[in-house]
Image 1 (spheres, helix red, strand yellow):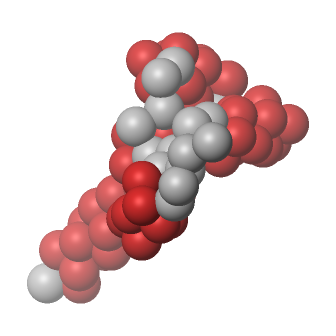
Image 2 (image 1 turned 180 degrees about the vertical axis):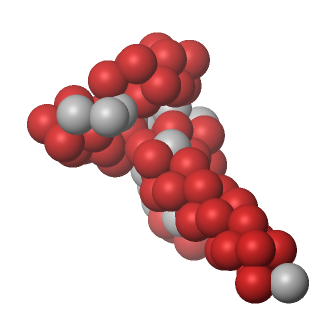
Length: 82
């Protein structure tokens, strides 16, 4: 039974490591980054390097996420235009 517990912990570790590895791609996905496919591919290929992972993370964060909140859109649309 101890062997089964070790396998279970190993699977949990691998799933957790994969989630951390693909954090930049997940951020790009949730922010609807226009270069999501490129972020995902580079994350898969260069994410294993610390410098590459950080660079891809910064790229994913620099994308055009939701720029305005709904209240800002409403305020701008109600503002008198000159």
